[in-house]
Image (tube, rainbow, N blue to C red; front, side, top):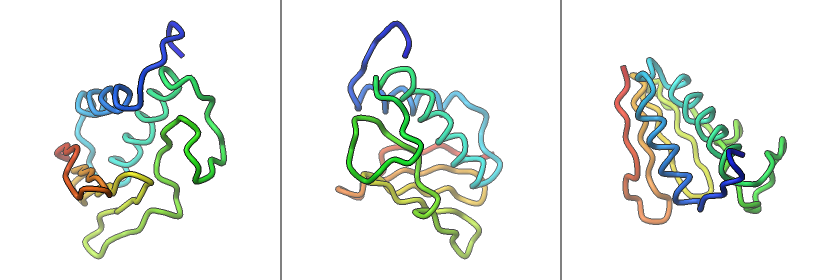
Length: 114
């Protein structure tokens, strides 16, 4: 964790989206999800104050985790869809990343692919 600073979940999520936006566009769905997972882990390591659990359960422990492999499915068009506790993540064949809220169905983040 950087400087011992703990940030709220919303603040951390904002940093995740900022860092994702600054990355080069993904060239495919696997790269888009990898960028999301790597960015999320990095932000959580720095600002959550919660050590990473290598096998997190379904109960919230104060830390956000990337989508679990068993919650990711391939679509007919070659894209990937990952379902997390709070979001549905679409990684399109061209690398576009679209995150929608499971609660409201609203788009919360979009990043164009390559």
